[in-house]
Amino acid sequence: MLRSLSFKQGRKYDDPASAREIQGFINFHQLDMSEVLKPIEQFKNFNEFFYRELKPGARPCSAPNNPNIIVSPADCRSVVFNTIDEATKIWVKGREFSIARLLGNAYPDDAKRYTNGAMGIFRLAPQDYHRFHIPVDGIMDKPKLIEGEYYTVNPMAIRSALDVYSENIRYVVPIDSVAHGRVMVICVGAMMVGSTIITRKPGDRVGRAEELGYFKFGGSTLLLLFEPGVMRFDEDIVDNSNQAVETLVSFLSKPNAGVKRANDTSASGRNVHRSPSRSSPVCTRHAQELGERHPRGTARSKTKDRRQPGARHRRPIPQTAQCCRH
Image (cartoon, rainbow, N blue to C red):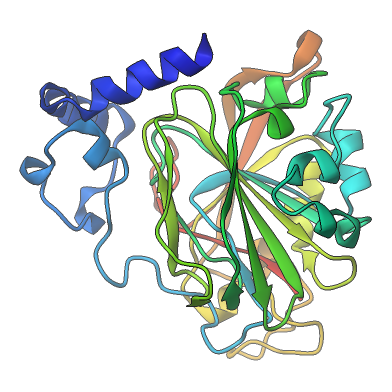
């Protein structure tokens, strides 16, 4: 049922008649069109707008000369865990969830390498920019498709007994990175997602913040898997995640806006052991409720917002965020 509904929705938004819905969507979500590459009238249908490209320079890479910095793969609501055990205790509640099931028959021999490793979960809402990007510098291996379902990826579903990530359709994309070992990027389709398009090829040398692909209409999620001990996530995002709170992340282009390796200092001379929201004057956070409930009504899912001061509080600045460190 969800598969047929998702395909039907995809066809609807590929129809030229759907272009009339673009302006209303922009107005409702108060989207910033100044960074979009094409003017509205050039989009032939709603889907073309949904996976719109941005102007060159709209996604500058934080610390471009420091491969130890990992960047968020998307505009998103994120929860991150320095061990997968923590992820399964707090957020991923599917009874059958395991890394072996998540990687399926795509890369089964790699499952053991992520035992006790770190996991980042990056959830895209429909109003977000839906192209996703490379989180680490390295060489990309072959993307492999695992067929599956189209369950919703909202927090209520993920924190239920259903193993959504391992049941849903997904691409598994390994990157042999220069500083963080073999990193798995898992692109999970969800309810009403038309399809997932990977725009890079196996063997490509890829760099942080470069495009990896895009989702057609719907919600979707990216998962990042890291081997044990190769990196750790920023403390403020981890703290939020440990309270089952998503963090809304937006790109901070200045290198001193984020966290470097433990022994580095930023360009301004700040000690970078502190979390980005406390160590940089260009970053602030505001609590924002999403209106989604956890299973059994235990709590509301909330999002804490990292973005530039002066931005509207109703939505994030649609840019990619640096979120973790070596």
